[in-house]
Length: 237
Image (cartoon, rainbow, N blue to C red; front, top):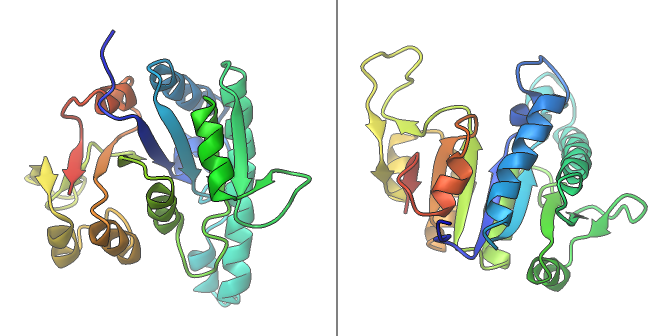
């Protein structure tokens, strides 16, 4: 059995990842697929925390651009992440992984409140932890929340699962001559505006020297390969 390269990780999933080929909501197939992929690294003894977006239901910044108050829109987006987190919790537990959802917004009938020491303790006991509701504050994306939580729990790396193989110097869909970038610095990401995350998340990761790996979620086994140190996707340091 391959040995894991990391002991504690944060895995960031977009809401769109759970949507699959649907135009809205949660795809049962993608829930099963993601749960199986997480199980593959759980079996290696890796301590796992996840952050899930809510874009498959609601995107606060998009709606606010059409006139809705940004604070209200962002709070609705946070609730969308809770829906996704509960669905993912159910899928993980069906695969024998004890899972706890911790929310940045208090809703004790639904999930536990985010308390740092409690989150760390859950992972030490072999439970997967899902951080929901972003940071609990408007104007911050779930990308920023993922970087923040990774720093708080002292994760060794942040893995961002996307629908592309990693970073390119141009849009690979519209530019056939786009070159794949295997390794890049955070400073280069900021200067070239490569768009892998919002600038707040990138700056926070850079300031705290948090490694970030971007890879294709739909490549079966990719999460396990990344955790075991194989060169998959793009590494940002």
